[in-house]
Length: 340
Image 1 (cartoon, rainbow, N blue to C red):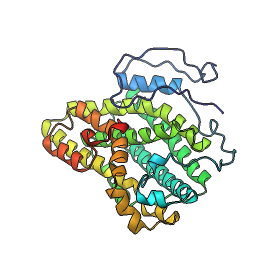
Image 2: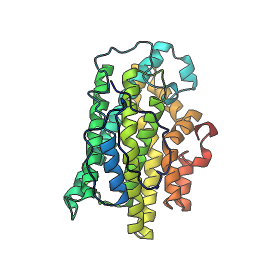
Image 3: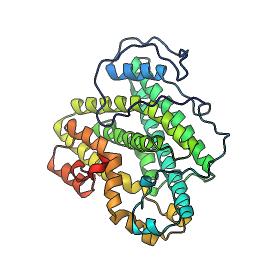
Image 4: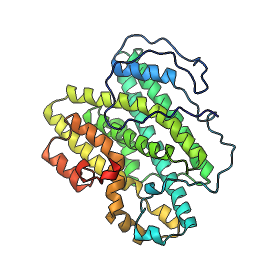
């Protein structure tokens, strides 16, 4: 089983530095045999295609799925629990916490699968509507879809490995998934795409960095982070391009939608079913999760990178969006320092 090289995971705006052409190798030092020559094209598409050729990992081969679950390892880092540090958390026993972590992991992975599927639908639509469906930007979109497909397969397999069934989509998510193809490509769709990808990446980075989590899960997140870095750069460039192409009014409306989506992201992770499975009453757990100081820490940790990118791009520079983000407890100035 290969272990993807651990390089520093950069949070925030991807670097615009020129691409360095190099001879890629696998983690064992052997040449990558799937490399292809890539013609001149837009910088973001070229970066994605070159990196995709250089760094290819297979979740079916690079994770030892036949290995048993380690009963001494955790299903999630403690700080990713939605009620970590609360009075309920301190009253729970070790077995209860493990059950809660397993169910919250299944919920997280299921939501991530739906999010990646929705993004792939939008990318396929872009290919269909493209004026040059055989150009390098289309190839870059296909590479992103391929990466998303591998991620969804790995996430689904991890849910199966946990012994749990995938969670059902929330009603709001069901409605959004049916309307996603009817939404025109604009600044708002690019912003929300980057928001979700960045949040998944930042959660994955925390899990990949924790030696106490299940080996299958940690290896999965390492593999995910390799592909996520290049897809984040591509999504960031797409957002900047949309901002440049649209007028002030359109971008203001997009910023409003992006701010609302940012505020709603962490609440989408909080679900009643994991609490029930762990023997905790949702009537107590749900308000505790929303009202605790941990909410601000956790919501800020998974959205801060995106919000800072939005600020740098001029997306979140109006009083209305700033107010929404502050009230939603995801404005960078309100995030506890230890999460910065």
